[in-house]
Amino acid sequence: MAQGTNSDEPVVIGEEVGNVRLITLNRPRHLNVISPETVSLLAEYLENWEKDENVELILIKGAGRAFSAGGDLRVFYQGKNSKDACLEVVYRMYWLCYHIHTYKKTQVALVNGFSMGGGASLMVPMKFSVVTEKTTFATPEAAIGFHTDCGFSYMHSRLPGHLGEFLALTGARLNGPELVASGLASHFVPSEKLPELEKHLVSLNKGENDAVKSLIEEFSSKVQIDENSILNKQSTIDECFCKDSVEEIIQSFEAASLKEGNGWIVPILKGLKRFSPTGLKITLRSVREAREQSLAECLKREFRLTINILRSCISGDVYEGIRALTIDKDNAPKWDPDSLEKVKAEDLDNVFQPYEAHLELQVPEKEECRWDGKYENSAYATSKV
Image: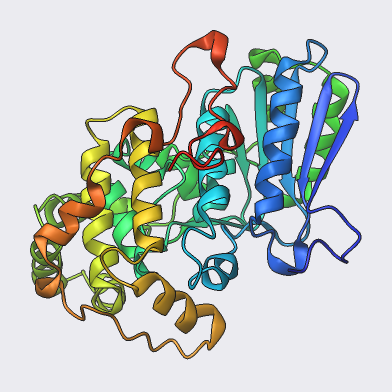
């Protein structure tokens, strides 16, 4: 796989300046998609820096015109004929997501450009996430037969009303102002000011929350969302996406599209009807279950779902979705099953079943063991499967 701007450059660059540490996601030609090496390097840097008493502030940004467009789908596709070829990177990524959410040092994400799917998991959980007019966010996984992962079942389930189900199922995009307004980002800063903000954060040389917040606010602007923003359609979204099943949601959304002033629904509905039926059903159930679960429980469930999906336990849709989107690029996936009513309830139940305790994602429960549970110490790495 290509890495960075050429094969000699690291996919993640870590820099040390006084009490500040800077991370740059460095695959600009590939929109900084997350490779197995990216995950390993991020985990190594973050663990070392959390344990280093001299480190107070972590900054993370993307090289080029993207923050991160998410996981490297080609890695999944290349592993489709080898059982559990991607289990290690999935385990490491979700384990890392837990530590990003619960990190002990102040983190600031400087997000300019695409921040999609797993890439956004390096943005939303940060203490401070700064977005610009060039930022574009989405969680489009359901469309390709996958599910909302990397902690987003947890994050989406905590959004106002049923906005989380809407974003997870439709893959709808949010811009910078919308991210701040919805609570998925903390500050909006015009892109031309971002380099200067970064310099000032480095010069600040400390991670005290109030000091960092005050500095960011010197550069930030109040957001005003467009009158046509989906955030202004919350009542319609809640009315439709509160339904119990994907079938009922689509039926309700279709009825709402016929009402005056609801033309915005038509293209979204068209997309929904083209998405993987299996991906939609798994995603809705996952976000709904997340409403009653902790972050750790959500990540464990997402781990099981991902492994079961990659094992084609319920369908091979994820590979067909990736093929149509990124390999052949014909945008003509052939889903199996090809309709919502053909997705069997018992198959759905099976992919949500808990694993034996030693096969679950090992999320550390005690603070003193906070960095335990690594893949290399798991049952998968020590051949206890």
